Length: 400
Ligand SMILES: Cc1ncc(COP(=O)(O)O)c(C=O)c1O
View 1 (spheres, protein in one colour):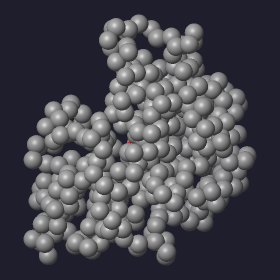
View 2 (view 1 turned 120 degrees about the vertical axis):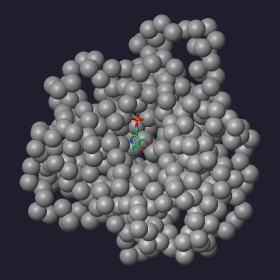
View 3 (view 1 turned 180 degrees about the horizontal axis):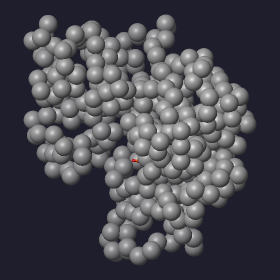
């Protein structure tokens, strides 16, 4: 692995939140565990929000504008659909249709609804594993069968997948849940990999639910390719996206679900007519439009910081904790840490929690049996990341 040892540039003051302000927040990340535990789990960042987003929210808050919202003469959610289309065209040259874009509050809800609309009970749904935990529950809670597409470390390093491994399991499979960039491995799939997935979906007539929520968080050398933009993909693709990860506004509950063709939307509507999916609130709508249309410079500064944190993490792990292996993420602020070589006799999450006072995400949440793994969230300041690493090092040295 090519380890970067460059010094980490100081965090732009506009992003900084003191430990006191972090602890005073009422979000899950900083409230769930005891005060002496450093949280590094849920996908939430320890930074101030972009000023453009804050200003957009203030415009409503200052005048208590809380009625049913309209924007530009249309129902307000349309403003999000149009902003999504503009952004996809501007950044990726993909032209989704605003009229085929539902605006809702929750992408987990969209995953459940997508699985239910495009498969029948008992049918198979392919999910890359390890996976964002609600993908698994969306399949299991709705009585479908999970067909795992394993992400494995490739001979040259980095995670990849082998579609041939699914042979013999494809009877009655109707949906593929794609997570790109992938949580928790941090892979941003190359065009060839996506084309291979598309050819496979065509060969087996699968609907692809493509969750692209982490697409804003991409590092040097990788780029995001919307799956539905591949030639021929739109007719079988439903794309999920939101500003909530890249711009750190998950509590504002605003997301989009884009259908590649009117036929796909019509099929979805058979199970989920009209307004069954609900719609987001006015503050989330304004925040999302401001994020997507106005906050690209803020995002660029954020991504530069996250990339420096990732490299710092990789360098310190390699130098001080060689027993823990990580394939350097190309995207997301999530690192999937293989701690099996530590030889722990309990789940790695429990040991780090009890003995180092760090709360990672437990590996088994992403893959049953992966108790030897944890997921680390490095979207924080360098002092906090260093404190996490120092605690890990002290704990591992004690147990060596
Ligand atoms: C891949 C992925 N999809 C969806 C979500 C959550 O989406 P929402 O908060 O809109 O339900 C997350 C949150 O971390 C995620 O990582």
